[in-house]
Length: 262
Length: 253
Image 1 (cartoon, rainbow over the protein chains, first blue to last red):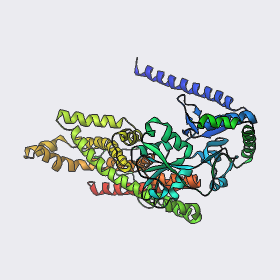
Image 2 (cartoon, chains in turn blue, cyan; image 1 turned 180 degrees about the vertical axis):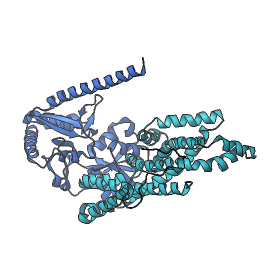
Image 3 (cartoon, rainbow over the protein chains, first blue to last red; image 1 turned 90 degrees about the vertical axis):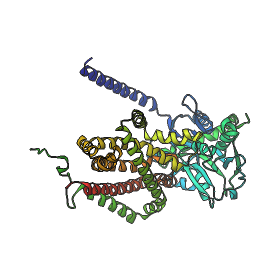
């Protein structure tokens, strides 16, 4: 084969791949563009609330809940896996219709987004290495606490006096650094803390939940929507579905599936 | 168009003197933009600016430490690549091939998380280590090219005057090669400074991570990243100015 033949072949391959990609893109777009779809962004690194299974599907408590809400309210949830840092910027920019990513409802966030009714109550748990002697917030003075960037766990750690708060892109990376001893503690939502510190075999023999951070008011997860007409319509739809499944026992069944003792 | 073929250093730098050159425009423009933004909308811009200083310091620390070790590694590698010793040569060449074939981001992850299972290094050390190892390979190639650009006659002359091999390298070859080496190495410094933004992935609180922390809390994404881009631009422009100055100091004319 001369150089020229190889070049022509290469160009042909690239062209075919490009055409194939575009044709499929159109197909995909057609699949998504049915009226009853709500496109949902989820950072699937928050087990057991939302995570990726081995088939790269987003699974967990929230996806199950959304399927049930969708069935009750008559829409089809399409879950996209989106990185946490920037997830709200994408929502406001209209890249998707809502965020379901264990978002705690806070006053600051209410200024820029709409929230559904709460769907889960959470507390901020502090994970430490076993035998570290950390039992309360006072013991954290002078220590480094890791948390995921832009989460209530990070805000809580930052608010503690004399504590160095360190941010990570994903909570799993913070846990890994705690496991290897680079930081002294991790603060995050309690279902996630329980999952890492109690259920993951490689972490559970070395890590434990030390205490729950005391807080003034209760903290709840809500689904977040952009502040516009479509957002308002979707909030009403999701709230309707959530009320339905709370009334008929579906909600309790899903809680039991994900949080009962295994 | 007539092209005059001349010796290397006699070719004029394509720089326009006076106020209307690209460097001045970018530098003054970036500074003016920062000042204007902070002045016109102190909330959020002034708040962002107040949030960044310790991050900027970390960016500088990682940059200077990495430049130092990368230069050292680069010199060693460059000497190894032109060495007559087979083993040294193969080791240096393999290092360059392997490191240049792995993305810096992957190297950072590798040093911090993969090796972290067996070898606990603090995040700053991991960052500097990965940056130095990566840039050491690139600089090694620049050193090798610089050394090989010096005429063979120089070595022959030095050797016949009774200089040892080592003396020839350090007293005759390298001082001359330095002129060839400096401009591309200066560019590497600037690339290195920009690439330090990657270390924010390791939870090193550099300027970019400080900015991301601010943005994720306040939702001022546009404002934060605009300011960060401008600050990086100002710093790299200053650095490139310094490199250009050093080049002029070293040039023959």
